[in-house]
Image (cartoon, one colour):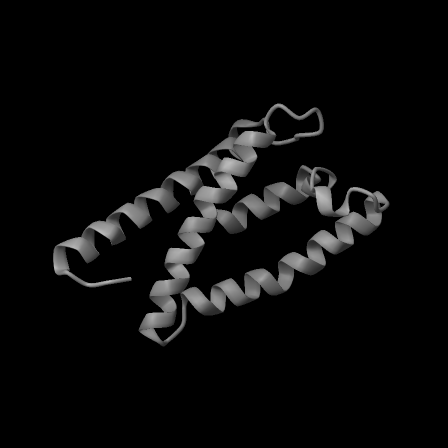
Length: 119
């Protein structure tokens, strides 16, 4: 859902609501947004699909936590005038991802508790 949300972010010009690049011209903000996301997503795919089970497990936990935090940040931005993610598909991708991340974390926590393992 995260990767699909980023496609939606492009069509919704998400770079316009990011405080770190707000002072830049719009076309430069878009380039910075894309330039930052490309290596991040390449790295995420490599980490969550790693052949090393520990790296893979930790990466999946971190991505799940990020999805929850990402959903909370979007929730906080809903009232802002420049916030563009008001369509049903945007909300499904953002908050669905947060819900799936929360479920993954809960299930992993439950499994670790039942088996006595630590994170």
